[in-house]
Length: 194
Length: 280
Image 1 (spheres, rainbow over the protein chains, first blue to last red):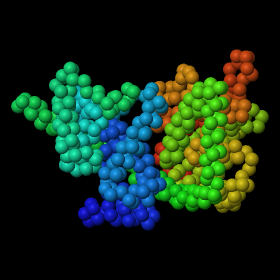
Image 2 (image 1 turned 120 degrees about the vertical axis):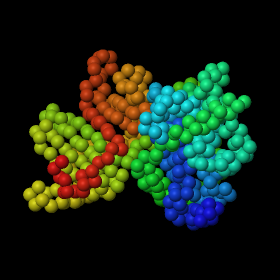
Image 3 (image 1 turned 90 degrees about the horizontal axis):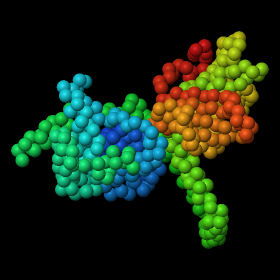
Image 4 (image 1 turned 180 degrees about the vertical axis):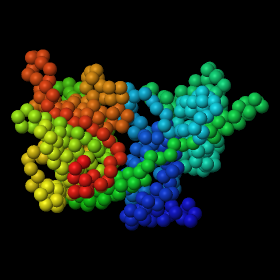
């Protein structure tokens, strides 16, 4: 079934109050939403908690969501709102906790250049949120830049710019250009430091 | 230029050495269970809202006028009384409670040990294990070594008749008094509900907190309640209730009741079937 037909089916089930819609949303969108939330939080546990909150919100606001013209981008926007609220709420309680990276893991059990692998992981975490999200969706969820643009509510060109700038910043971080400060607004580091 | 392109290619290659972490086992069930609950609750909530709106519809203007007057009076009282700190304190309490309560409602299993004072200065220990299916297994061990096990589910208490070896069930309203004190720890939702009454806030000094823990304090009747919370998951680790020491005595607070929690660990399912593993 093509994605648009599935979205229509989900919308009509939500409209009539059929809970099967939740299962359909899970099979159709949960993996992409989890990848997106992982990129925002830089934490698997937080991403999973946010995903649960997204589904609870869907259940509560099903009539409203049934009227969404573009279902998938709507769910991505909902996920972003949930994630940002969660970041705001958890700031206090997590002030004293050391950050642990559990969301992005090496494919190989024992990578040849561990230092470089770790450095890239850190550099990715330090990117501004949007650049990190675009890179994660591009590399780890196999989305085209146009698809990413649609999901995030931005143009394909803007998504391409985010991708280009993100890769450029990663390159600078990896070649040790210390003059470039990229702890910009929206980076996970920035969010934690606030 | 060529160099930077090579660098970019190298980075894209290195990004390929990673993958997103796999979701936790049971995430699918956990998320959909919570969503279905919210679905059902919102259905009943919708009816209640409609009824309320209908009932209030006739007096809408009067209600708005009363609410405005109340807000004005509250504003004046706060301005005169300098209650900003009270307001900030309330906001802090709400934030802490929301984080802890949210985590408790998302828990999938609970294993806790409650130590309470029994008759004649002896300490009685209870072990409560709860699963997401809504069954709680309660084991009591007294200092004399005698033990008893109950299973509680959907308002029904089951126990094994030692003489006949059969399972007896009764309504939770008939539960013996000695077990009633445990009702507040029966499920994570019950714990969350009970904690709301403590008026929890972050302790001023976090000296007694272990790394990765936050200490919250509150009050219940004449007792001080101290809860150590995992700062990452916002789930309680330990709960202590002390009798308040008389003001100005400078005495240490005596330990009165202690609970230690473990969350979201795998618990064998057979433990939740009455009679199947009565001695465990």
